[in-house]
Length: 267
Ligand SMILES: C[S@@+](CC[C@H](N)C(=O)[O-])C[C@H]1O[C@@H](n2cnc3c(N)ncnc32)[C@H](O)[C@@H]1O
Image (cartoon, rainbow, N blue to C red; front, side):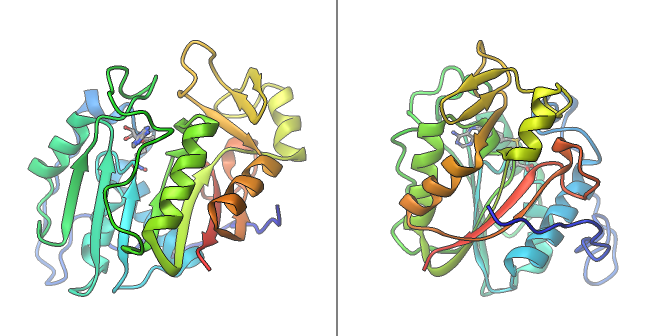
């Protein structure tokens, strides 16, 4: 996989969380502590801003994009998008966690006509053990060519290889031609494999699977890393064209993003 390095992008903050376009203060609630643990460490809204900035820098986020946020969690990325997308743009986020989606719907003061949060009870050993929908065969409930940009942050790091294969296909199907994908992964290449074998990746990967490694055999969706060749093949067979790869901090690289970022597009 061809590598690019996002070492220091200082223009990555799209909007301050508290200031509206008209300079009045918008007070956004932090998600409750018991929910935020499943999203990740660090300043929640600041990281959302940073991800939106990275999406702009690497996948050409535009104000008129129709965005699908796969595994949208607690709306971390939706906030900066709610300020950046204009009337032509829209946002649909979906997640397997009912609590996350209920919180987004009730706590985030976005225009609900253009910012929609959807819940589907998809099986996940880490996020929804009672889920009734198999991620390997879940059909995203949108027609072909619905979106111009798919975002999947820290989602493929929680999917089995067969679920990831299906999600890549569904992303390709629901993107318009020329639509882009901004997705994060743990990609095992020569460098990260070496770090993983030394036990110093964050998170640690201990169990080998055919397609890469997982962190915990008892909870396989907790952390999943895919081999670079496997991922390149999965992108290609989904009908996506690989554009760029930015290694992340998880593999001991001094860069902005914790996870590796993969940019691709639908031809
Ligand atoms: C680490 S969180 C990241 C959330 C969000 N993308 C962000 O960056 O703030 C992973 C999210 O993926 C969701 N998730 C995990 N498996 C999923 C699946 N098969 N389908 C949809 N969402 C899933 C989880 O519920 C969780 O909200």
